[in-house]
Length: 142
Length: 131
Image (cartoon, rainbow over all chains, first blue to last red; front, side, top):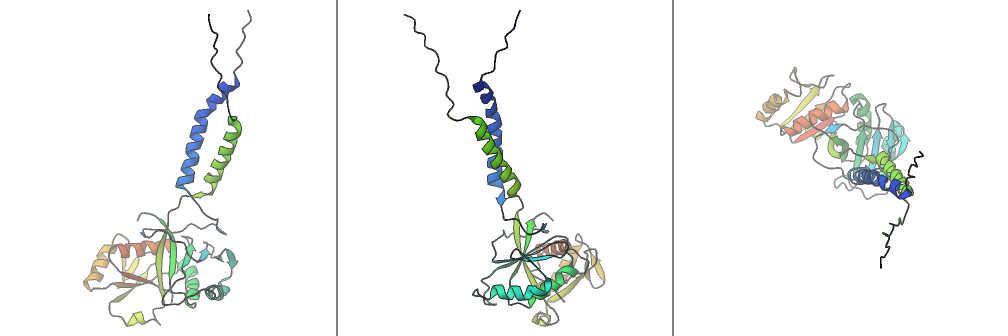
């Protein structure tokens, strides 16, 4: 006796895909809505945790510093000696007054950066007309 | 008369496989590029206490930190848990401004924990000393 196995129809096999598509669509919507797409930084930086209630505002200038002490200003790798000059130069064409800071500057540093590494950077920044420095942190609980 | 009406076959307008391909690619893109970090801004007051006018203010206190991140005040170390006692002591002298002088070995995370705790307990102004 010969059994003829019924050949699965194409439409049936596609019907089985619908739950899969449902799940994938849900995941897609989750990642689209919950995640934030940001331009990747020059090197990996894990910002320190803080309880600051102020959500991040976009800043005009950004200085990046990783745990090895490497610096990147506006997406460009720089040396510490050039920092003050570059920041001053970046402030130049913009209408900047030290008393009414219209230019925002953010410091994105790795949580493992030590004071010894940070001190020369802050000293260099202090020699520029910059008065308002924002430290970028991530939300955490104390 | 018997009518042989066969059920009309569902017609697929588009094939599902290319659709899944595209959706998978989109999913991969969003999974790899999305960042779930909740970014926050924290104002960083930087000063050189030796040259600044803040030294002339009366209600200012200078806090050093130890290599392990404890606050040092009058030869006594305060951990984060003991900090409320220190802040209470400072507030009795109506001190609202703290100049933080971190140890060279402190990671920025330790300093921020300390700054957060000081702020949380009512110290209005915290300045990081860069001397």
